[in-house]
Length: 303
Image (cartoon, rainbow, N blue to C red; front, side, top):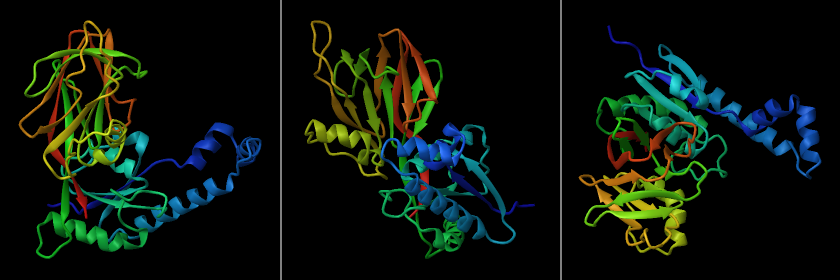
């Protein structure tokens, strides 16, 4: 017997909820902000828009479908199933947060606050949720004339002790404090080089609009960054420091699907984390090697 599809709504706590949790009541939160010439009203308005978007998306789930909801902080404990359609209600970054836990399920990005988000990954409005849910199941089944599912490239880091990390935007390797990291870098087409820097970024085409793009712009790089669906990655060494024992000859590049970047740790400990989730990081000790490359997984996002 085939299970009915399940709509999984993914969301995160709003800034308003975080403030109330920290200060205990609306009055205390408002008092705290008023003392800094800030108002709680805007955060409260955005909070209610997010709740309204969630309610509208939940109400659009077709009769006969199963329905579940998961908050961002619980994603690592939530079990996604093969029949799921994932509905992300929030900012673009929330799509990246959930991508690493999926295995081909279609994703719908819904923007609860149009005009505030870039809308790169959350492209749709809450009122379109019913139509989008049907479109996602039709696209997964390969029905003709349906809205396509775009397959976004992902990046993986694999350590020599089998630790593995997956990310949609980028993976950062360096000190947790972003202070000087020491390591030996081996890039395709070049010899291995000892380096000291504030870390290494390896990004997909999706991530090329974020953290990696800021690095690209800052150094006025002419490197051609990949498109979101291209099976390629860009990489940058941040603030490489030349010294008698460390070099700066290999600080950026592009990896195709058959290439990898190798980094051997020469500090006491480094970390690797993806998409800004520092709480979910690989712990890398001196002498360990981590390899970064195009992942086999893809994010399947409804266009």
